[in-house]
Length: 87
Image 1 (cartoon, one colour):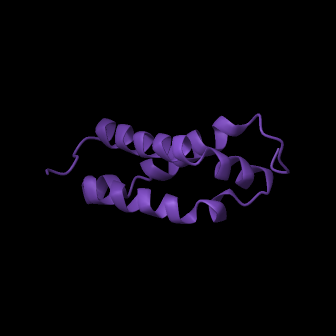
Image 2: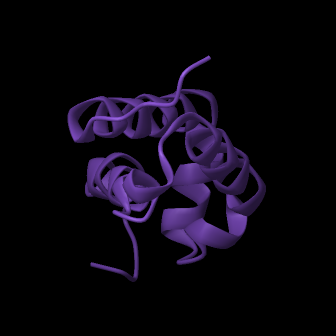
């Protein structure tokens, strides 16, 4: 399989991976936001997604942090309604 070479495609992949994490780990995400330890709660899943993203995109695109941005946008911002010490 060829590596993804465009920024737009890399962003889409990052968001798709983050969306899957959100879909399949809703309880852990809510628990992590409430306990202010989201990244500890989902460390394994986030790193698995990161490895998948890294394996699919060109190295220069990996360095642009599209995956980390997608994690924040989808896992954190989408849970703004959850009671937390964070906000």
